[in-house]
Length: 383
Image 1 (tube, rainbow, N blue to C red):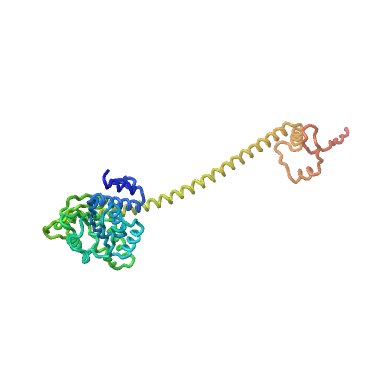
Image 2 (cartoon, one colour; image 1 turned 60 degrees about the vertical axis):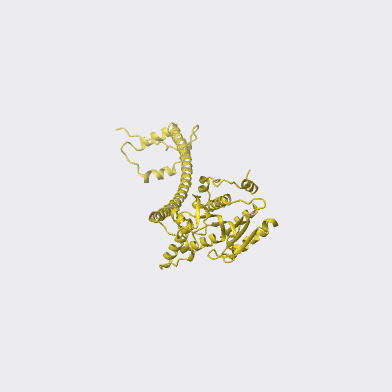
């Protein structure tokens, strides 16, 4: 097992730069994806820096060290590290982290506030290796920063650097913030210094900037970043500078256009997702209403069945009445009293019916009006 493998095993990390599944990263939230990319860069830098040997520690310059994460990892594996950053709060946080480590590790680290454009307090040829992680795309003059790195590194020293590859998320975020501010104020938005210094790097522009001072030994794409390993040249070859070729400029315009289309598609996807959510809620309301209507229909069906049963009982009762003797007598009486073709006068029938006593028949139990007493017609005298 190598020293790097022992180091990764001690800290519970994987030495392989591609230890995260890209499918899982895309499924994870954006913050987790950024953290995974950051960890991959840190481990890639650790794996490509020269390692210290017993009694021969490597002196490393961590330019733009931020909170000292990489510097402290290098110190734990035995390197002597000098971390420099332009932000005093970041250096203060790095020192607090260092103070919590064992004394031997803390003694191998030194954090200083400084600007990469002028490392005046650093002597020439002081370091065996240097790290420039994500600073060449945002510093004011990357040529001057590389010149300071060339001055402070020993002949044949190693430089490990990373820059965002193409249009980075930071550039898009700053551009989106500027366009939003301009749309709200209806005036040209003032571009911040950080937004002005953001550079877009491709292979050609990065080589044109680095190779006059450092010989690039390895240059690869690592999770939306260009990561490279270079060796300090004894003599400068050519003039370093930052410039995009025609092909890179055309590709940059095309990439920005694609990012705008992607942003529009994401906005449309968000809108469609919102509409889908609204339709789902409306569908749930319709399902609830449908369930209520079904319950009401079931209740009405039970009511209809009940009324149909009552109607069948009434029809049976009417049939029984029509088969009774009392019904036949009433029918015969009406035929005698009201001959066929005659009309019943309600003014005649109702008073008589009101005075007529009711008679309850024996078996049927149905009340029927009593028949009037029969009157004998007077006898006609004989002639």
